[in-house]
Length: 164
Image (cartoon, rainbow, N blue to C red; front, side, top):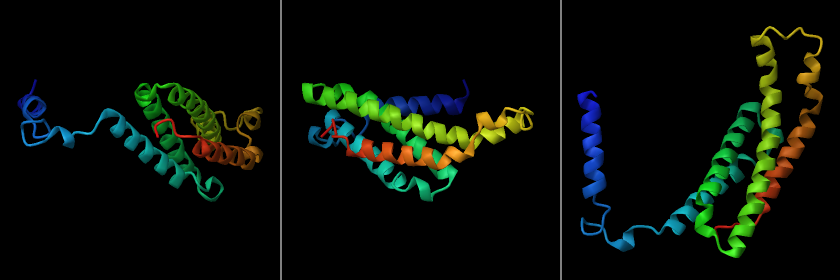
């Protein structure tokens, strides 16, 4: 292990054990957020990001739609990770519905991404002249896929929050 790595690990250990964020080291227990509050804030932040980036999928380019796909993936993973903090009957029911809506959204955005990246994949593998290439990458359905993905974004954003 190099000296820089060792120093970093020692600094991290010192911060974990003696950090100012700990009660008695300058922070009060009131300054440390409760896990549920932290989770609710993190989920709300992810929701706002998806709402902002996913509001007009038909008016943006493929790269922006790919960013929305990554936003949705992060949001879903956060929802699954923090879900156990909201495990009362109502929260569990809402979280299950939410995760299903997120799965549908990710599938729809994934189909759009496949359509956008498909031609490059075919070229990279020397299949761009293959007779069946149009059955793999068919752009006539792009508008329909965008419409479906937008409906999935809107449906997911309309879903009741399980964290609030």
